[in-house]
Structures are given as C-alpha cells and as structure tokens.
Length: 460
Ligand SMILES: *[C@@H]1O[C@H](CO)[C@@H](O)[C@H](O)[C@H]1NC(C)=O
Ligand SMILES: *[C@@H]1O[C@H](CO)[C@@H](O)[C@H](O)[C@H]1NC(C)=O
Ligand SMILES: *[C@@H]1O[C@H](CO)[C@@H](O)[C@H](O)[C@H]1NC(C)=O
Ligand SMILES: *[C@@H]1O[C@H](CO)[C@@H](O)[C@H](O)[C@H]1NC(C)=O
Ligand SMILES: *[C@@H]1O[C@H](CO)[C@@H](O)[C@H](O)[C@H]1NC(C)=O
Image 1 (tube, protein in one colour):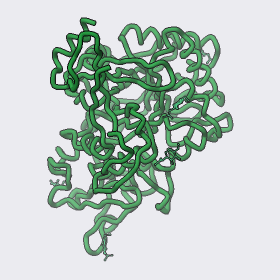
Image 2 (image 1 turned 90 degrees about the vertical axis):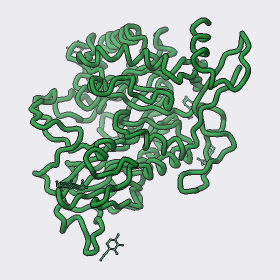
Image 3 (image 1 turned 60 degrees about the vertical axis):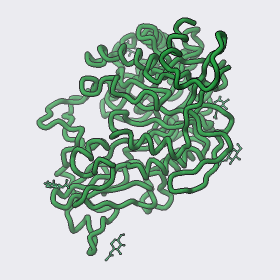
Image 4 (image 1 turned 90 degrees about the horizontal axis):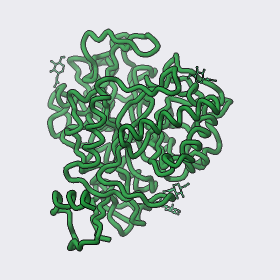
C-alpha cells in the first residue's frame, strides 16, 4: 500500500478520478472503445480489441548495448512490456549465461521498468487470474540468434527439463522478473549452424513449458515466445498442423516477421513485408505468418514483431534505377560488397558461437539511417536520396546512387500500415526489435496513432 501511494504521489497528472484511500488506480494502454478508430491516412477500420483488454505495447531491449543506451534512455511510458535480451543457453543445463554488460544492466532495467517515470498499472487480462503489474512488465529473453545453441539439450530429457525449469526460476527470483521470453531460433530447425537440433525439439519445448507453468513460481509468470513466420516444426521438419497446446502455457507469441529478405537472398527485397500475397516471390510476410499460426490453431494471442531497422545492399545504378530515376524493386545486388551498416563496428574481428566471423551485417537501425544521411530528422528521405514505397510489402526502400547503397527498412508509413493490420486482425499488439532503433519515437508514435492506443486510467 505504501508503495502504491508513493507511485501515486509522483503521478498526479494521471489521475482521472478522485483518489479515495481504498481505491486503486489502474492504467493501461488500449485502443479506444467503440470498435473503430481512424488509421493514419484516414482509412476507417474496425478492431476487435474492444473488450477493454489491454493492448500489448512491447519491445526488446538489447542488453549488450547498455553502455550506449542505458535503461533510462527507454521511453518507458509508451510501453507496457519490455524484454531484456539476451540470456543465453550453455552446455550446462543449469547455467543460463548473461554477459558482463547485461549482468550489470539487468537490475537497473528491472527497477526502471517497475518504477519508471510515468509508471502506470498494467492489468493483464488473459485467462489466468488477473495479475496487476506495477509499471512496465519486465521480461528476460533467453536465446536469440546466437544464444540458442543448447536449447535442444536443455529440454531433451525429463531430467534436463526439470533442471532447466529450476535455472529459469532462479533467474526470475534473482532479478525479480515478471516473465520470461523464449527466443529459441529454432526448435527442430537449424538456425546458427552449430546449434544442437533434435527432431523432438518442439515437443520437448512444450513439455518444458508445461512443467514450468506447473510450478508455483511459474504459474503467474508472463511467458512469451519469439517465433518465426511459420509455426513450430514437428519431427518431419514441417510446420505442425496444431500448435494450440503452446497457447495454453504461453501468454503470447511475438511473430518475428522480419529478416524475410536480406544479404542471403537472391535479390534485394523487403526486410519486413506486411503482405506478400501480391508479390511474385513469396518469401513470407506478416499477413502470411499470422494466417499460418492461426491456421495451426494458435489463438489471437499474438503480437506482431516489427522492425526498427533495415538491411542494406550494394546495387549498381543500372540495376537500381529505371530510366526516369525511380527505384526498381527486387534488383540484383553485389553479394561480395556488403555495405557497412550503422550496427556494424569497423574492423570488427569478433566471432559467433560457432567460431565463424561475425563479419559485416549491413544492418541500419532507423536512427542509423538518420545519422547516416539517408533520412532527415523527421524520418523522411533526405535530399539526394531516392525513395520508394512498395505497395505490396508496404515497406520503403532508399537508395544513394553515389555510394550505390540501397536499404530496405520500415518508416512511419509502414509502421502505420502494420498498426492498422494488428487492429484489423484483433492481435494483442506489437513487439519492436529493438527499442534502441527508433529515432525520436517516430516509429513508435506512428504505431500508437494507427492503433488508436491511449493510456486509460480508472479508479476501481
Ligand atoms: C542434458 O544436459 C546435459 C548438460 O547439463 C548434457 O550434457 C546432456 O547431453 C543433456 N542430455 C541430452 C539428452 O541432451
Ligand atoms: C489467449 O489464450 C487463451 C488460452 O488459450 C484464450 O482463452 C484467450 O481467449 C486467448 N486470447 C486471445 C485474445 O485470443
Ligand atoms: C520508373 O518508375 C516509376 C515508379 O514506379 C514509374 O512511375 C515510371 O513510369 C518508371 N519509368 C519508366 C521509364 O519505366
Ligand atoms: C551518398 O553517398 C555519398 C558517397 O558515399 C556520400 O558522400 C553522401 O553523403 C551520401 N548522400 C547522402 C544524402 O547521404
Ligand atoms: C472479430 O471477431 C469476430 C468473431 O470472433 C470475427 O468473425 C471477425 O472477423 C473479427 N473482425 C475482425 C475485423 O477481425
């Protein structure tokens, strides 16, 4: 009670009803009631999120960047869940690793989430008993592209699952976490080449999640999973027809509907296509991914993973531009001349867990496109930069003819389209990879506006 009052004292501007001694103040982020809102561009759309339940406004926080982006730099009051990335799997099932920077930053992250300036109460209204979280739900993600090497062994046997459950719950209690995000890339499928992979991974993962959920300390945890654009695969390596059992133990999944095209692709293409049903080469999209998970009986407990970054490609002017100087979609690019992205460190000689050099990723964050001169500070293309918006993928491309660099990315317009889609599908909300990529919250503002998200406070 005293804690609650202390929070109130710092937030008088949030109160919409007179505070009586016994009243609790609950604030949540949700689309306005009434079943419709105006999307950016004035398109009228309906939403199914009208039952007063909270929308999930979430992002991943890259803990390894904590020196440059301390937890205090997060716009905490625009989110109601934040996931610290990454703790990583190790050969010892009882040890889940955190690098030094992360170990130092995680306690600060959790306390910032729980006591953030502009803190609100977030009411989680899923099928389990209502839980009230003070501030922003603080989750820790285990895995990631380079941290999933030993997931398979951690869940391989009953004995290992029990040990892994204990290791996870130890982390929860040590860092006072509200939940855990499982970012296994990917069960039953090769991600990083040296990952351990077993045909029974998905089923073992489910057994592990069930055991975690059965523990007294696991019952009320927020459990999420970051997933690919296709449902978890079965022993035959094909997406399973029915993944509904996962929805009984997970609060939600975040579909990572990005990295669909990149340096590994045969041509330039959209990093995070909203749609691809209109494309000649259908590599996946938010639309097809939501359809696939829904068809496999996962309920709408889905957040759409959205990208505050893009991939760069070296493209010759003849391939990139038509005779009137406009960007041509899906041009070929020079594979052996990967441009350096804003996320790359010049002279980086580091290696991934398989011992392979990390090399040049070519990834530009949205903020990196601004600092790199592709975009102005309002997020639109700078003068001298060619811009096009692909009406099928509903994502933009920029091109600098002098440097021959083309970037496929997301901007305010594509984020608005994704926000409209999230509402129209009745999804739970969004998850941004990653929270440091935005510039002056241009992308986040666009999502909030398109989804009609507002902070609602009520006394109860
Ligand atoms: C169980 O975990 C241990 C490491 O703690 C590992 O050595 C062993 O291979 C795992 N079991 C299986 C079947 O993967
Ligand atoms: C989330 O999952 C639970 C359990 O399956 C279900 O009862 C609930 O309706 C789902 N919520 C949404 C928004 O689909
Ligand atoms: C070049 O592309 C633009 C945009 O797609 C288009 O409007 C224009 O007609 C094209 N020019 C030629 C010569 O094809
Ligand atoms: C385009 O690339 C050239 C050559 O690298 C660079 O000098 C210039 O600043 C870039 N233009 C913009 C608008 O960023
Ligand atoms: C809203 O939900 C109803 C029933 O679950 C469904 O039939 C309808 O298509 C949904 N509407 C939208 C816009 O998703």
